[in-house]
Each structure stands twice: as C-alpha cells, then as structure tokens.
Figure 1 (cartoon, rainbow, N blue to C red):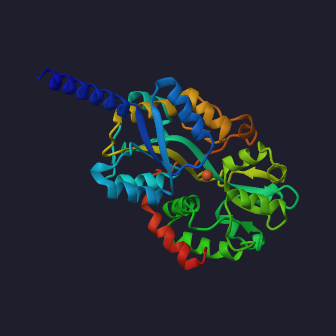
Figure 2 (cartoon, helix red, strand yellow):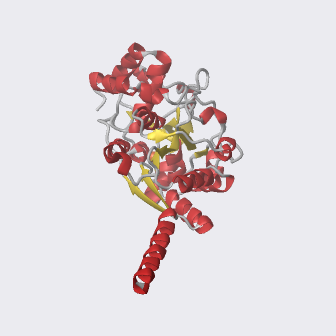
Figure 3 (cartoon, rainbow, N blue to C red):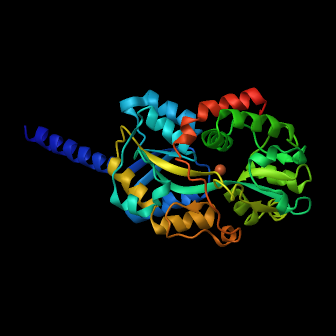
Length: 339
Ligand code: FE
C-alpha cells in the first residue's frame, strides 16, 4: 500500500514538472523570413526563460494549418507580413482578441487593428527605387504614373503571386476603384522590362545590371542591401535611390508585419508576454537596426540608413482593406496578364 502511495506521489510530481515545462514555451506559425527574428526570440528567452518554437511557411499554408488543427492546434501566435492575411485569419475565426494596455501604449494608434484581432510589430513602405544613372527624380510621382508610356520597357517588379504586390493592388482598388486599378495594371504590364521573376532584392540587382530603370520594392530591402557584406548586393543598393510615391495625394502604400493570438492558444499568457516584448522600445530598436523596417512603436526612430531617405506621408487606408479587396486584386492580376 505504502509503495502505491509513493508511486502516486512520484507520478504527480513528474506531472507537475511536465506541466511547468510545457507552460514555459510559446509556439509561432510565422510567415516572416528575416534573420532579426531569431535574435528577438533569443533575447525574449534570455529575459523570461520562455522558449520560442516556430515554424515558417507562407501565410495561406499556415492559416490552412490553423484551420485544420482546430482545437488541437499547438499554435499560440500567427505572424504575418501582411495585414491582409491577418484580416483573412480574423475573418475565418482563427484568432482571439487581445486586450493589453502595454501593447496598446506601445504601438501607434493608426497602425492598430480597429477590430482588435492583430497587433503590428513593424511597418514597411512599398517604394519606388530608381537608377541613379538613368532616371531623373523629377520624372517620378505616383504608382499610377508608372503606367505612362515614358516608362515603356523600364519597370521591374516581382510576380503577382507575392503578398506585397497583392497588398499594393488591394490598396489601389480600395483607393481608386476596380476599374481604375484594372486599367493601370494593364498599362503597367506593357511597361515591364521583363516577365516578373525573383524577389524584391533581385529587382534592384536588375537595375544595377541595366535591365530596367525603376523597381517597386519594400523599403527595408534597400537597407539590407546597403548593409550587406556581399559586394554584389552593396553595389546594387548603391546604384539606386529611394522614392516615396504619391506624396502629393494619399501617401505611399504601407503594410504592417503583425501578430495575432490563435483562438485555441495553449500558452496564451506567454504569447501575450511575447507580444508585449516585441512592441517594447528595446525590441523595436532591434528591428529597425537589423531588418531596416519602420517601428510600430512611435518612440523608436528608423535606422540611420532609413532616416537618410527622409520622412514620408503614408497612405492611411484602414489596413484591413488590404484583405477585403484581395480577391478583386487577384482577378485584376489575372485579367491584365501580370504573371
Ligand atoms: Fe520581406
């Protein structure tokens, strides 16, 4: 009898220990693909003892996985580089609202989700970069103007399967309507220097190689090129300048990178702690100085390189619209031949 009690106590102790171990972790499904993230998670673990596990894949795959796993999902946080995908996840009922005054105070009001389902950690502008040799800055103005004949055979941009371009097109549909967006896309495709291929960095390299003159890219990639150890990347970064389009009207298109708390998060407290940490001034400094994104925390200035491009007016469209107009944007890509 005594032995049985001892075994029982042992079992309970081991059970407790396991439960405690289990609570000291947080699981991420992440669409982000930047080196800085590992550094952030390491810093968080050093501070709190909470281990950060993550899997990386594209946003649609991760949302699908969350949906299929349902109540049994181990995921605590969904991490995206597109407000549109966060809006989609919220729409599918995959997230729960977070109410943390720490997070609310950490991030700019105008970048927050009005519905309360996701929080921004950084933002980025989809800018124009142009050849220092072959383009006069005065010739650039708006995204819309890139469809002008003067740019025939000179525009570089990646494929329409990419979320950054999908978000940009969604913003144009939201701001100007589907018909204008469609006409724009049709004319823009005629101005492409080549069939869309490669990532944002490849478009800048193509300018350096003389294959085109103006590229549509996310701002931080220029920071990454200019701080690269690779000669080819440095040269590509130095061959171009950054231009913020639409400064005379609605402002340049921006998107956020953000986090949402999974509906069935098993480590909710740890997840909120991580959200609070990632929006803190300390972690926001790590973002701006390593990934050259803009901080969601208004107290944190951009890196020196990014400050060099000057301040800009951002399109203050409700970022959930980047999700709401996504299907229409995809149809426009399809019907206008933007591969
Ligand atoms: Fe990126």
